[in-house]
Image (cartoon, rainbow, N blue to C red):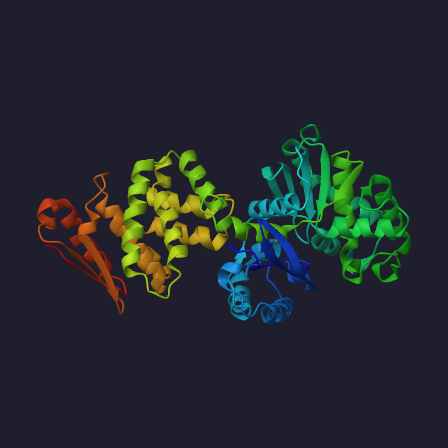
Length: 494
């Protein structure tokens, strides 16, 4: 990545949407612009987890304004990440289709673990380097992430379903701030977070940091009212709760340092924060400058380097964890990407899709750890459900569909096969698995694959079919398999 390159990260949170633009310089990112809009999408989820039309429209309107600012940016310069509200929303796809069209860039709905990883990356990059063991807490609108880390490494990560928007809506209806409401909200928060004590015992960390909205807002309020700057203390938190209760309702809140966009969700956020202080016996928490959006920016830098891309490390970890035959995985990866290069359109971002095909190929036998029978079904299930740092849900699902379709009938992938690029990736993977059936590197240089107007054609050099009769027979069966799809496939075997 060249010095001066502009990068952008978009955080589609439950309470706010945020756009961070930075300039890359010698491994670091210097802020160019920061835009935050209070969208309150989390408030738009009903009891059936359906996002209201009004909440979706607020999100689309905000993204339209972000899109104007991002005019001229290339895809590799932008990462947009959606979190808990869109993880939960039953009509997520409806929102996402229009949102991506408006924004002009892909939007990743990430898992709680991936959100936590990005949060820690953002926090750690903006803290002075040290060997301290840190607990990082991020109280968002509908989820709270906790991370135990040291230096740039996140060692333990969890995401819990509670946050400022969710708790404000549930325990402080109509903005009422009462002693009973705070007690009930804190007890409920402790019930959700009880298990976190085993995952993040106080004996394993020295300093606690609070990332993003709630902790930053509380720190600003305390500093504006005479408390020490840059720290949230237990006594300060107790003072704030007392002030909120005396106000009685959010409409009556008049506190120096409080921003209007936090008014409606302050009660829920503070109740969750005080529950964390009590559970972990925290006396003070330091507000961190970094957050998810900074983590997403630094992830863009890491992805420029094959070894730096956390997804590459995740694939290696999964291969080791599920005892994959590394030699066979590499053979299938090599052959499938070589075939894909022959049929990928010139205007396709070949490297990006080739890399994802390679990852799917390297994990195509992940399901054999469970059972050799229908292993591709098991493999697809694993990829659809595993916590895989660096990957978004759509990326994992596409890989799962490739693994599912590596062999057998194609009817199970009827919807995915409507995508031409997916069809090309799948054809390349199926042929590679077929050609590597003997678990040896095949003579794939003698095999040429072409594509034109919905039709695939494979041709071999003279004498190939005599040298590899089993492969030739399998290719004949593959031609028959594709006859039951909208795609044509023929083989000229010599």
